[in-house]
Every structure is written in structure tokens, then in C-alpha cells.
Length: 244
Image 1: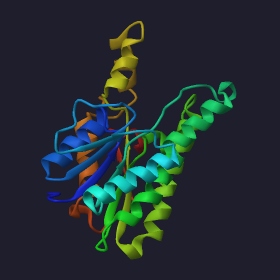
Image 2 (image 1 turned 180 degrees about the vertical axis):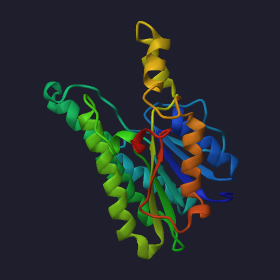
Image 3 (image 1 turned 180 degrees about the horizontal axis):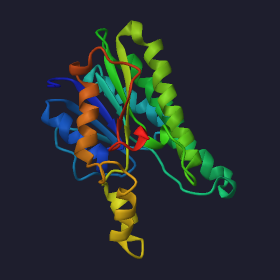
Image 4 (image 1 turned 30 degrees about the vertical axis):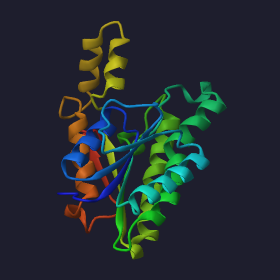
């Protein structure tokens, strides 16, 4: 699954799944354009181009695409890994918070797709959207997040059909609960972190969390020529959670 000389944009690249995806792509020979909200990230390498910014800002996304064109010419792969999660009962969620969740998970993805699809070469390219198991099933207190991640799935499916004639493939990875620094920190905030972990793992048929590398493996597959006849697909990486 070599990505020699391919150029890839990875959003949300500063930690967790995004960091693992960047590492996998770098290992396979890709040139990396990375972005995230942090002003700098420790995992970026000298050969990478890291551009911090807010993907909710259309002017920033347009400028990011301009920098990509000037630096690399074309972009072969785009991994949409950024997002925002907010837990709250539906009736208690403030409108501004709901809007932020929808913008950060869905509308920002639309902006990146809009500005980066024209940069893909004539031979085609690949978008891989990182959604969530909660984009496929509902869950109390996660209603807006589920709506946004479900919307991301439908955005990908529609784009896959619209761009098929250009050989631009658009697919989705839907991770389950993954052992990222954010999730690990959430366990630590509980009175009994290990009990919280066991309780969450008990909800998963494989009885454990995913690792970021396991999710990155799925992203790499959908980004590579190994999946050249796959588009508009949703690949759950959730230990069987959505098999119920």
C-alpha cells in the first residue's frame, strides 16, 4: 500500500487518530500537509508542511488549498479527521454549542472537500472521512454529535457519486471508542478510571477499545490503490459495536 510521492492532507493531525494516520502515511512514502488548531505539533517532521488554523473559517481553508497548490501542485489524498464532540441532553444544549458541533464536524468537512477536490490530479484521488460509530447509531446525550457525524457519512456518499466520473473516491471510516489521549483523559476525570474503562469496554463485543493504529490502518487502506474499486463505503472500526 505504498503512497510513494503521493501528497496527502491530514486534518486533526496533532494527536490520537490523526497522529497515527500521519505516521502510517509517512511510512508509506507520502508527502504530508498537516493541519490542526495547535500552533505547533511535536509529531510533525521537517519534511512535512504543518499549517495551523480553524477549518470552520472558509478564508483559512481557501488559503490552505492555495499553499498546497503552490507547494505540491496537486493533492492525491485528503483525510478529514478533525471534529468536536459535546455531550449534553438535547433539551439542555445551547444553540451556540449545537452550531459549533455541526460546523466542526460537518460544514468544515464540506469546505475542505470543496477547495481540495479541484487540486486532485486528472487521474483521480481519494477522500477518507473519519466519522464515528455514533454517525450510524443514536445515543442519549450525543444527539448533535451523532447528527453531525451521520451527516458526514451522507456528505461522503453524495460526493462519491458526484465525483465518480473524475475517479475521485470518497469513503468513510467509522471508529468506535478509541484509546486516544482525549478518551484516556476522560477516564481519568472519573472517580474510578478503571471501572469507567471496564464499563465502556463491556459495551463492545470485542471487549476492548480500538488503538489509533488500528483506525489508521483502515484509513490507509481506503486511501491506497488497494481499495481502487471502493467508493461511497462506510467501514466500521468499532469492535462490533454497530453489529447489534
